[in-house]
Length: 475
Image 1 (tube, helix red, strand yellow):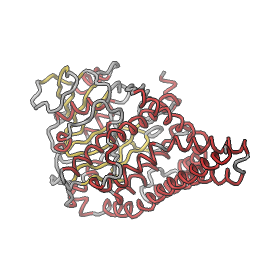
Image 2 (cartoon, helix red, strand yellow):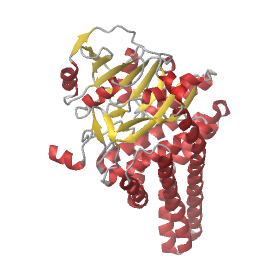
Image 3 (tube, rainbow, N blue to C red):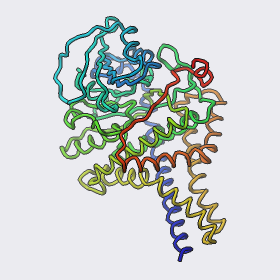
Image 4 (cartoon, rainbow, N blue to C red):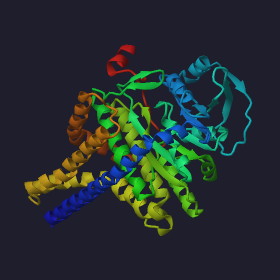
């Protein structure tokens, strides 16, 4: 009886992981024609000329900042000096307890102004609004902490003057022409609700004047393996969803939205610990329920760079929060599951994120336990164990290698052979140890969701352009 149950569990886990990795492979295949078309559009000389004109709509860049003293000055410089016909920067100091506000006051010569706009979304109290004597396009909002990015983004959304808003993180460095590339759909005659761009890892890169001037892969394991994760997620994961429709994720660190739609759905949900996926799901619902044809898509060549965790503790807080937010969002919108009314969102995207992302950690761990106990009881043999590990580990490694190859034949940001070799080596190390570690963190996300734990945890920063050795010396 026990042997039969173990065998059934193992076969179920094997079939599940085979199906999940095969869906990832499908996304990879679908991303190839998407990548090809975007690559050719990016190189079109006529389109490039038009992108530099005032035919593009003005944008407001929304920047929530909490305890970002290490990177805030460099980040604001990168936002202010972006190549775009007309944009403003709305930065919100969300109750920082460090020197974030002091650095802003000193670096940008801020002076206090009265508010001159309507408060559409309620937020935590705002202490003051500031303009810069050095940069007329900079507005700084100093407010009490709202417990997460959502409240700060809503304060920025209230103050934004322009019809489109770009939500970014304060620790994000946007490439000079990224806004022009991100706005490309406006010139192709498509109504746009939201557009997402690519996030890359800035750790170990050389930063000058708020720009990544030399892309490198960190020598340390944790940042290096996250470079691989980001390549895999953005280069084929989100590109593939363009073909399937119903994309539910636009990164909160780099996403462009139509402001009218965001106000219509009440902005960001303040109690969400992952406000980006929650916002996109509500936006998809709003578009479908009101029969609005505006598109939500992903473009690979607009790039922003961000700092990723370098310690297991910080990585654990981040991954637990991400998974908790995914679970809570899916539960809140559970009526989307297989709902024909919502098209690809209800029939493809929601089921995938529920069965393929939210439940994946529990089923994979169940598979590991089933194999180990099955071996002990003689319910499975070594051939099955090798088959299971091949599907779970080797299949995933193959997809990672293909992501690196796609990067090399398309954008090729990492020009040194040593960085590419480091990424290829990381595909092996990731499968044995790191994958299981993140599984543990994602399982803890279930417990956090059950307890309704809203703590974000501390995200320590090394500062842009520093290696691990530099950070230790500075300390």
